[in-house]
Amino acid sequence: MSAAAAPAHVAPGPDAPKVVTVDHLAMAFGARTLFRDVSFEVRAGEVFVILGGSGCGKSTLLKLMIGLFPPTAGTIEVLGNDIVTASGDARERMLKRIGVMWQSGALFGSMTLLENIMLPLEAHTKMPEEARREAARIKLGMVGLGDASNRLPAEISGGMAKRAGIARAMALDPPLLFLDEPSAGLDPITSAGLDKLIQDLARDLGTTFIVVTHELQSILAIGDRCIMLDKDAQGMIATGNPRELRDTATHPVVRAFFRREAM
Ligand SMILES: Nc1ncnc2c1ncn2[C@@H]1O[C@H](COP(=O)(O)OP(=O)(O)OP(=O)(O)O)[C@@H](O)[C@H]1O
Ligand SMILES: [Mg+2]
Image 1 (cartoon, rainbow, N blue to C red):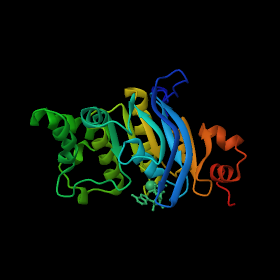
Image 2: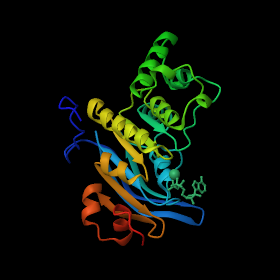
Image 3: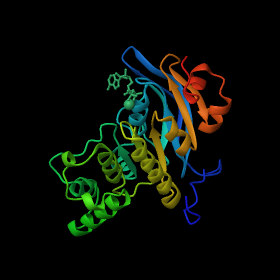
Image 4: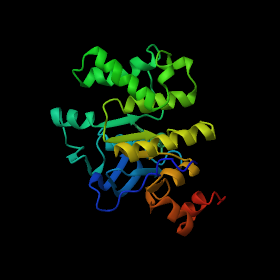
């Protein structure tokens, strides 16, 4: 790395304002309990990582945090609003300030990348078309897809689709971005590029990230703090700075994960 490189993202301290507060959250689908008592806070400018094995409820937790469905119990405050009870205009205003990149990517196949990124601007703003086009171009440039704006999703690689998904999530300049497994299935170099993008945005724009990922290297590189969910424990088995957890965790599952050991 050259001496002129931008400084790394610095984790915000405990005095930074709270962007998300999850308190005594419980979630079940019918008789199937995912978690019983999950509490954590996410602070402005933080890169907050949600970890855990497949099926433990990570994507469900993201969906709860954007109010897609109500929890079984507990409260969730996002950007100063109670997401569980918010409705109408208040809910719409809050959702405009949240960007989401879904696990599946979910770009519209019949639209170019540029049109995909313009979509949230069309739905949520009164910007004229040329301004939307320009804003979408800027977002694609930020994720390194400036040259691919006229391509269809079928004409780009998996890594490019992930980056386009992030560009679309960023379309409305949200202060809070949720990314569900942004680097799953990507080669290590592309994946490292995504990590850098997340860190740059957190540092340069102060964007708060809540990221679901299994990639240990990524977690250690970008995570300011994390929580680890566990299916058997039906809840959180760890919380803290990922590098500290790697060095000090005593819970066997947490230790095994961070040290990449078989159990
Ligand atoms: N809408 C739903 N209705 C019923 N069950 C659901 C629903 N959504 C998820 N589940 C179940 O809840 C459990 C947790 O699902 P979730 O998608 O949150 O897991 P995950 O931790 O994101 O897993 P992965 O790492 O594989 O993405 C799974 O058993 C899933 O089948
Ligand atoms: Mg998931």
